[in-house]
Length: 112
Image 1 (cartoon, rainbow, N blue to C red):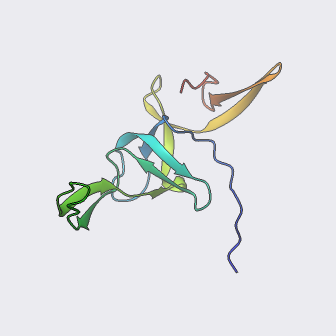
Image 2: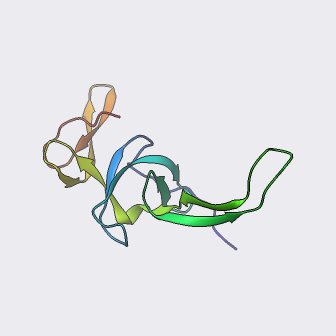
């Protein structure tokens, strides 16, 4: 029986990330979608795959080979710190009632 539990991820949609492992190492992109159940994220322009699609005349879709992004494991990506121009980690800072996401290296707030 497969366990159905959510994992906590510090990344959010819209974050700029860099690939730190795999075939697209060193490439940057923004997070489109995060799946917490299987620890994967879809990133623009990263992990491109070719999908063969059938034509659907009712919807007006043509068939052929379509390139689209496949999901990549969260352990293979890191958030991009634009100030330091390198990969970084995310930590949290409590400011009164607010909990802020900050870069671990310079403690600056992450804008997303």
